[in-house]
Length: 163
Length: 274
Image 1: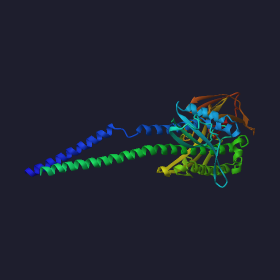
Image 2: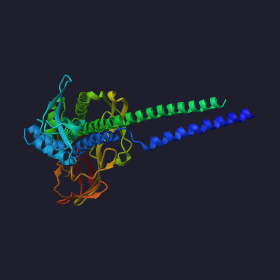
Image 3: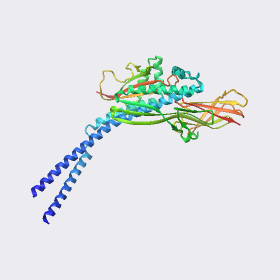
Image 4: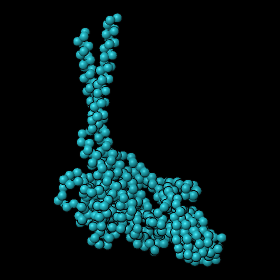
C-alpha cells in the first residue's frame, strides 16, 4: 500500500512540475516581444504606404493627366508627378519612382520603355536609404482623357528613410 | 527509491522544457514567416487584381464607345484599329478585348517576374445583379450590352487565376464583373429622372463629378434625333439624378439618355413618350 501511495505522489509531482514549466513559458511568451519587431513593422508600413499612394493616385485619375503630358513631350511632367507623390507621403519619407510605358509587339514580346529621367524623386541619387521598400505596380489607364484610355504603364516606387 | 524519483522528475522537467522551447521556436518562426510573406502577397495580389479590373473596364469602354459613336471617340477607338476594331461592331470589340487581355497578361508576367507571377485570365459566366432590374440575365462571351430600353446596361465578365510562386502563394482566383447601367425612371415635360449603377449594382454617385450625361429626343413621325439642351443636373442621392432640360420634351415620341461613368463605359437608355 505504501509503495502505491508513493507512485501516486510521483505522478502528482510530475503533473505539477509540467504545469509550472508550461505556465512559466506562457508568461515568458506573453511578456517578451519578437526580436527586431520594430524593424519588421516599419518596413511593412512603408510597403503599405507605397501601395496606398499609388492606389490613391490611380483612383483619382492622376496618372492619366500627368502621363498624357509625358507622351506629348512636356518636360514638366516629372515635376508634377513628383509633387503629387510628395504631397501624398508623410514628411521625412524619401521616394524614388520609375515610370515605364508598356507595349506588346505582334510577336508577344513585352517592351518596357522608361519615360522618366530620374526626376520623380525627392532625394538626390547619391542619398542612401536606411530602410526602404520597393513596390511594383502595373496600370491600365481608364480615366479621361480618351487619348490615354487603354494604355499600359509600369511603376516602381521606392520609399524609405535617409541613412 | 527517493533518488530515482527525483531524477525522474528532473528528467521530465528538462524534457518538457526542451519540447516546449522547440514548439515555441517553431511557432515564432512560422508567425514571422506569415507576417513577412502575407503582406507582400496580399498587396501584390490586390494590385494585380485591381489592374485586371481596370483592363476589363477599359475594354468595355472601348466597345461601348465604338458601338455608340466611333468617330466622336476616335482618340480612343482609332488606336485599336490595328487590332481589328470596327465601328458599331460589338464582335470585333470582343476580339480586340481578348487580344488586349492576352497582352496585359504577358505584361504582368514580365513586370512581376521576380515574384514568379503565373497569371491567366479566363472567360466565365456572371449573373447580372438583380438591382440592375434587367431580369435574369447572364454575361457570357465576355461582354453583354443591352441598350435602347428603359433599363440599359453594359457589362464585361472575366476571371483571373494568379500564382506568385516565389512567395509560395498559389490558387488565387477572382471572377470580376465590371459594368455601368442606367434606368430612365421618368421622362416628361422638361425633366428626366434616371438611376445609375456600376458593377455589381452599386449605386453610382459620381455621374456629375466624373462622368457625363446627355439627352436626345425624337418626335413621333420623325427619324431625326435631336440633342436636348441640358439646363441642370441634380444629384438626389442613391444613384438618382434629375435632369432639367431647357425646353420641353415632345408629347409623343422617344427620349434617349446617354451616360458615361468615370471609366468611359457608356449606357444608352430609351423610352417612348406619351
